[in-house]
Length: 185
Image (tube, rainbow, N blue to C red; front, top):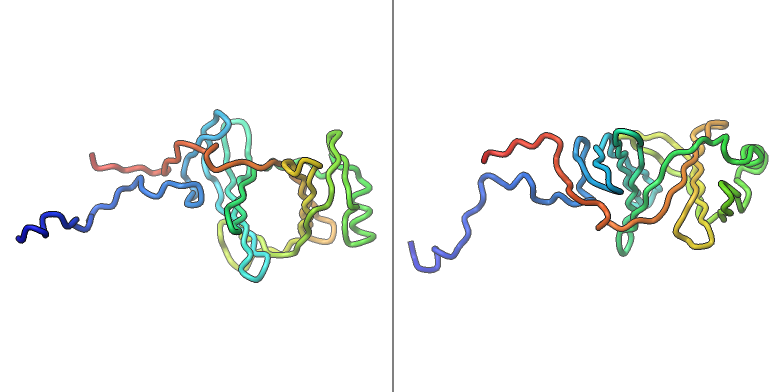
């Protein structure tokens, strides 16, 4: 063995099971801490909006609630957290407006906050990454701060879902651990 061979790293035959534990690499069964709760990743979904425009979604479940973490990659990653709400908790005129005009009104008041239509799109939802995906139309509304949002998804002619949420930063999620950790210590 030459002098320089001493400094060459040997290829690690047993990779570290804890490497690459980052938010974009969450997998089903992983655990992550957010908002003072440990949450389990119960689904890894994505939305395909066409032209290589994807949004990734993780369903995170704790003992008392389910939230959805979304990542929208662009020049940088945009992160948000949302919670499903009853579609009936939104003014029922929204349903009538969509059925009549094929679009919701340009603003919606929910929980004493006015949300303004900011984006609309059609695509396919891939639950747990499975093909072929389910078609949907989605409308996103933002409040006047641009930090809080309300989303409406239409899955069929009269099948609607709604959620509200807010922007977050990746650093707010900590202690990412795989679900089936088997370490050879």
